[in-house]
Length: 493
Image (cartoon, rainbow, N blue to C red; front, side, top):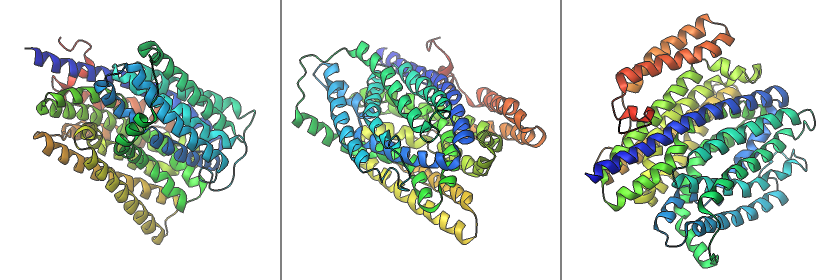
């Protein structure tokens, strides 16, 4: 009788992470939209484009310096004989040291971060955020291992975006040339403080800790496949920006960046599930309970798919109004926004499949991730060249890059789900047709509000109406008893 109770507790932990993440999404949306409005209206598309490109390079380097510990730390904590605080300290030391070296390299040789050569002394400081960023990532992973998702919400969805938005608005009146950079640096340090204090309270200080270079080196080498997979998975969400920056000017990059930031909001739904799903999967792997893993992967995957589809419909159908919040020049990015939102829905299966593959088929997962990048580059560049041959402008190139990302993520979802399904001997595809049936009335509502309501009413009344139509049909026709656990605080009720 104990095993069903354990599986029930697993689902409850996963559902709790999902509930907390919904709150985090609302807070992140509330904090990110003001920044996009301020950046677009005050700083302009060109300045935003240069800022976006610098962030893409720095944050990609951060992913590599983290060495896969955002997900690998759970495995180390589960099997390490040393005190948990020592394990966390080893991980932080390893990644922070590597990040410091790379950051100094970018500071003294800033051309990769600012390829246009347009930067000042304040702008050159942006690589220095790499150290607090890797510490924050590892701290949040350590807290998630103890099923503390609230710290992630506070750091990533409350402190970081609101610090960025408020300071970007204030600093425009003081240092308009570098206001966004200073605001971003301050937001990273604020998030780091918010994340590190709970880690100290949870794990305490290291005990009889003596860092061993060889042990840290083995840890880095063992995590290398996971680090590369993490960087590739993250990089697919930034590679599109880099590809567009090669072909198009800063203005088109700035417009695409706004669409990308809006589309990345539903992507955050998966971030709370990933660390919570990791310990659940590792425990079931030890017991060789593959049926339970299949059930959990499909369940969480459906929750993520349903949530991301809801946000994609709510933000994509009135897309012109959403993009127009940042200024009239950004409305041309509506097509890219729609494709990026669709890409996040398509990516749901890959996200949950990878959460298990990193433990059972690490190298296979890595090769699929690398193949995904190749597909993205080929599809994006090919579609851009096709758009150029047809005489279409740079905003169509932005849509072409978004379409390339959608194709690549679709490939990753199909491949990773098939590999995991074969290993488990059970289904690993979370897709359900109830998402399509639920989307149908939402599309009708979206068509009505965009056709007959003014732009302000589309956003004020249209978005809630679209969400209401989708969620009602999904709740009545698409959700079973297991799915409704997500909205029930007492899973045994």
